[in-house]
Length: 67
Image 1 (cartoon, rainbow, N blue to C red):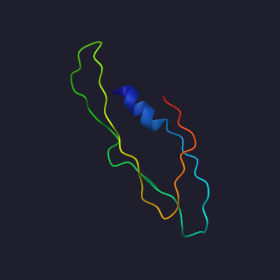
Image 2: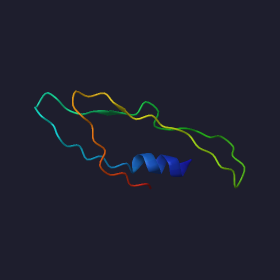
Image 3: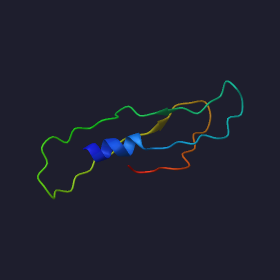
Image 4: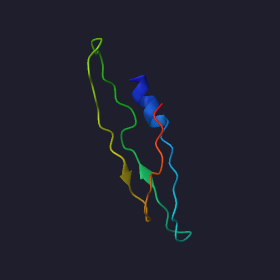
């Protein structure tokens, strides 16, 4: 669980292409933490986090660094 939180915290976003002062990209992550509860050792688990672009301009994620 700590690793997933670290992964989300380590996402580096570089936003480019802002065409005017009013138009801007915006990233929304509705669920930033997920608790897996008890997980037996050596189990494979996963969870999908939704990333949504809610701004007025194109959002470009140019680099992601896992933590």
